[in-house]
Structures are given as structure tokens and as C-alpha cells.
Length: 361
Image (tube, rainbow, N blue to C red; front, side, top):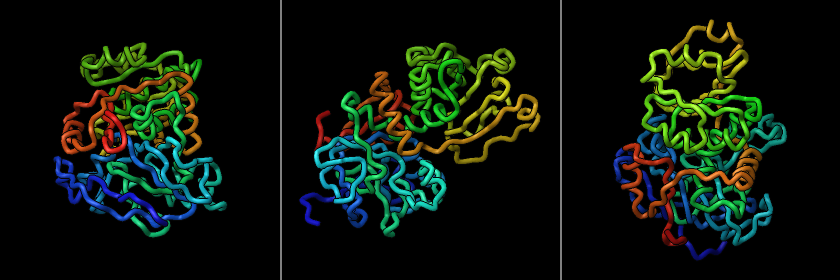
């Protein structure tokens, strides 16, 4: 296949890369197949997963690694067997997953749960079915299977769409799958990159009440502006769990700290309520008494990004309801500084890198 562009990106070469040591260099993308799409990257969100991966926090990273799985850009090459009606020139995006087995005898893939496939391929740091390594979106171009590439609705800007493709879907999916909507009261733990999306999507789904839960009230005004009806500061109210007992149907915990007061969260749930964990701590979370589950018939679960169909639903809802994440755009050439700012918790609440070679900032 002839092309007049080169695959180059900001590469993590070892765990020190998270300290602002990413190096811009060429990489070899996966072997092009007729189901693949090449994307000229205009925007890429920075996700907490990028940080965990760069520093090998979730296990040893296969360096060199080009992270970034909130990618938006222009389709510049499409195979003859692409899905989703994507054509050259379309504005498209890809999230944290870029492939799965897609076999008809795979229960997950055949049931629309590709994100839970045992052969799930991450957009970076994984291996494609061809054996080629996957590289992410801190780059000029990206290549991957069209099944996991999505057209971006005209009503959503590229800088806003990018963080939706991982950060957004990570909270939209558990909210939707656990019945968030009219008649339900929802709590969102952690008012950060994921949590702020949780508040936005709970509101967009029409729940009766949205409760923001954080350690302090520092972000209370932000939470209210994002749609929270109520705010619980767990470090400022010693009786927070008892004062708010049996008040919520669904809680989505977005925090990645292992110091989770799980017993307190369970106390907040109504009978038959559910606590869903989406933040992924690098260490084990604390234990709790089984009685907390049994007495009210509550459940604890987890959620992993979302399926392709759920991503399409989320994008359509965002366009219809005017969901607007709080983002700050930064030039991709400044990625080393932006990564350090992200680690220092300066983001309010997502950073989107703009590839100034392909887009204006």
C-alpha cells in the first residue's frame, strides 16, 4: 500500500517517561488489512490509563510504547472491507479498544460485549491478531481495525469528542447498564476526569438526583455546575455514611486510590442497589463484611470501558443533549509538560492534545 505519511509519535522508552521523558520517533504500525483504517490524528485526550502504563503501574509495560486512546482525526486510508460506512475524509475516533476476536462462537463478541472479549486488544501496549504491536494516539497517524472506529457527530467538537472515547464511555456504560434514568438516584465518587463525566451523563440520562461524593468540598462548586444536586464530603462529615444511608440506587466509583471506604459506600445504597467500580487502583482495595451485601441485597461490580454499540449510543446522546466535558486543549508538542501537569492533578478536568500539524489550537 502506497502512502505519503510516516507513523511517528511520542514514545515512552522506560518508566521514567512519565516524568516528562517521552521521545518523538518513528514506529512501525500494524500490517495494513482491508478491514483497517488509517487516521490522521488531530486530537488525543490524556487518560489516567496513559500514566499507569507509562510508569508500569499495572505491570511491566512493553516499551517502547506510544500511549493515547482517546483519538480523533481524519480517515486518510480505508480498506475495501471497512465497517461502519467510513470513507476517506470522515472525521472519526477510536477509544481504548482497537480489536477483539470477533469470532461468531465468542459469546462476548457475538453478544455485543466486545469490550469483555478474552482476546481484547488495547489501542496501545497490546498485540494485534497479526502479531503486530499496537500504538496509540500521541502521534501523527494511527492504524487499526474499522470495527472499533466511530464517526463523530457534527454537533460534537473534536476536542470534546476525544476524552469521551475512554473517559466518557467508562462511566456512561455502567450508568446505562444499571438502569440510570428517571426514578433513580445516582452517586458519583470522585470529581476528576472520570467523575466529571459521571455527573454529566447521569444528568443527561435524566436521573432524579445526582450526588457528588468526594473527600473534601474543594470541588463542590464545580460539581454543582456539572449537574450535581447534592454533595457529600467524606472527610468533613464523620457521619456521612449514616447521614445519607439508603439514599442511592446506583453508585459509580471513579477513583483509583486503594483507600476506598467501601463499607460506607454500601451503607449509602438502597435495598437492591449497586456499587460499580471503574477506577483501577494499582494496589488491592480494602475488604468489607459480607453482611453489608446480604442485609440489603446490594451488589458490587465492575465495568470495563464500553462496547462499540454503547460508544455510538453515548456519542448520539452527547450530541442530542449537548454534553460538554470540561477540557483544556494543549499543543501535542508540549506533551511532556502536559503529562507532568496531569500527574500533578492540575487538569480541570481533561486535557486534549491538539496535533498542531493537522489542526489549529
